[in-house]
Length: 497
Ligand code: ADP
Image 1 (cartoon, helix red, strand yellow):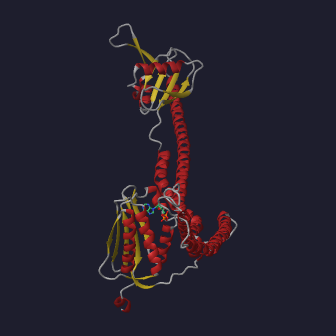
Image 2 (cartoon, helix red, strand yellow):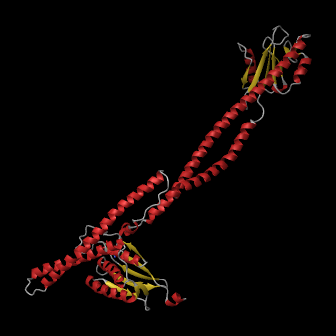
Image 3 (tube, protein in one colour):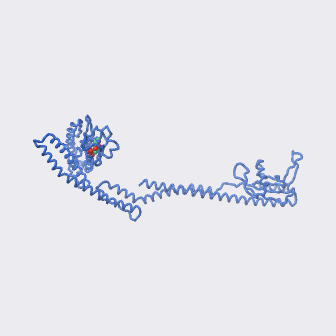
């Protein structure tokens, strides 16, 4: 659930971040473009005002003088240089901010303002070409230097076009200063956006948690339905006809169907096992009686022996099935009383020695000196021990060892059954306590290692019914270790205190 909640919050935050980035970028670019337009309009306006001033100055001077003068060029005999009448030039020099270019009717530059004095010949050529354009241009932008923004310019063409007069005036300037508005907007967005995204992510996480909490409850309830005994439980269906409500109702309906099938199956297993017990007992008695017949021929005795073995195995299987079916139904309550585990383990050890002797397996028994008192049903603990011990001997090859050890702490007793046998594959370890599970199903039930795959399922039930736990560790070819831990009651002094 945690992961869905996290995933939803992450997706939501990523979507929000993308939206904010796209929105911010569009807003910034749009604001920037309009700020540039505004700045250019203001500049053009200023240039037009300025050119108006220049024009009226020229007109004033032209009333009295030729405003363009030819003078002998210094150092170049025979050549003339052109210039404006001094008073007008002084007036124009008083406008130092912008580039001012003035040409005469022959399109020769007669005045270049101080601000334009460091422009190279290429730039001046560009200016002249622009002033000469046909049809004449009255404004626009021009790149006069390699770096920076292009210049905005305004041109005014004057009439009459007589010698000594002025043909055209160009005033040019660049936009000044950074675009403060859009930059401030960008900075504000960069500061505010993470805060908004963080707040939205926290909010999203909280909302996802709230929306998913009924699902969380349902998962916990479904998790609590672990086995057949808890199938009667139903989920608390959230109110309303939304998806969660329908999911809960459907799960409940499914649980009802599963419970009905499960109960029917359990009933059938219990009844069938119960019904089979009596005919098996009759069969066994009949075969045993026939076996004692003094005149029975040898081959008949052999057949009867095999039949008796099969009947015994079947009886054990039926008994085990009945045990598990009743345990599932909760009809099997243990009759537990305080008993010493030491003699039980010792007794199982002795049986193990007999089995081990037959199978060529050495049995080592380790017991504590003091009694280990636990609240147990002795018969069931004996069954548990025998299941583990017969398995250990059964799955150990001749020459191997089976070790049985009982130890106790203040709170629990530990029974370990360790063998040096064939072991269990790692992938199979999770299945050994399942009903009817056998590592190699192809092995026949009556083959070299007979069994129905119920022994460990019953052992687990017995351990858990005593409040304990059972675990297995194993490596193929290196043997297996089954560990049973049973809780011990507090010692009498502690109980009294
Ligand atoms: P079975 O009657 O077949 O022995 P169990 O429930 O007792 O049934 O065991 C289930 C399966 O677990 C066995 O078939 C066997 O494959 C495996 N197993 C149990 N004990 C051991 C062991 N000590 N060593 C190796 N495999 C074991």
